[in-house]
Image: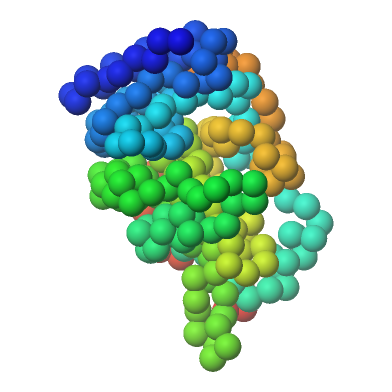
Length: 242
């Protein structure tokens, strides 16, 4: 099984389709996570999944789970939570805290996390370039002051948002962040949210599976289009939180 190695400075990724058929989706390996490499990978449907022995392993998955923001499904219990619970949802208020919290979140069935310090540094660099965004959910602490309860982050290229990870320290906090993130992303012009895998969590929001060729065709169209407005930062929603 031949796995291509991308030399530093070479950001031309191979076609992921043979890897999907032969290598369980493993497309190639690199020694770096340079921002230019990340920005070249995502429009090809490729993302870094884990690191080992100072090497980074780049994957594609198929079929691909996606959500169209205008078709987001919100269940009855979550609707009730959004109406009745105090919270605040913000965008890009504390990216470094969100990605660190995602790294620290327990993953049932997984030994450790792929969001290692080098990953955090790479995506924080993308954040500074305006291509990685965090969404935060704040709940009231015991003294009533807002505390970070959950959130999510991902990569934005053109009109596609590539979801990366989420965390929740308190009940429904990541779901609350995601619901308001999806609404805000739609207002900004995002037409497709890439979920990578069709987890039960995403299926409850209405994710659907696309064959890889269809997913790649959508990326070819949408990644080259501009947003209606910048994703920006600030408060997206607030409910009964002083």
